Length: 171
Image (tube, rainbow, N blue to C red; front, top):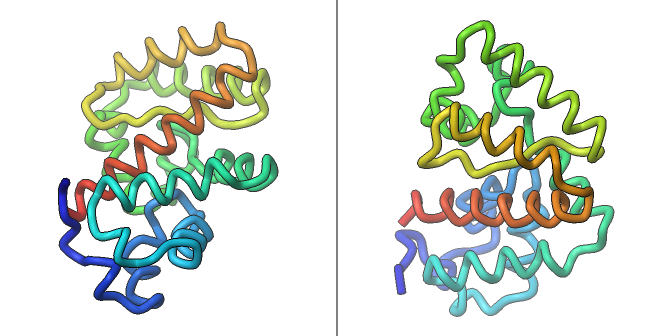
């Protein structure tokens, strides 16, 4: 098991929130509920903290889950172009080369973002670490063929993956 640098068992709530409140995009309620519903002694490893946070999300009502999904920015979207992303999203998108898109690629991202949101009612979400813009565009195109239920589940799965990757960076 991978220990966290900052162990929950050695934190007060404010310290825990400062360290982990940003893990789920614009959703500090996940860290807060994790703190409230778990013994901090059981949150000292990456595996345990990741699982506990995912369980909070999975146990949330549909409205909270949809709010979490919709808190994610479009990939290579207007927020990125206006430099309005969270530090984590900015770094993740840059790591995938989304800040290096050609005009044609940006146009395709804009078109795909619009089509995806029109079809599913929420933004396309994918954990971009380890992917490049070509991989992301291919996944985008393929996932547009799914139904809403598949994409809702995929969005939550990808959100958990993003959160775990963000936690892993803190180990």
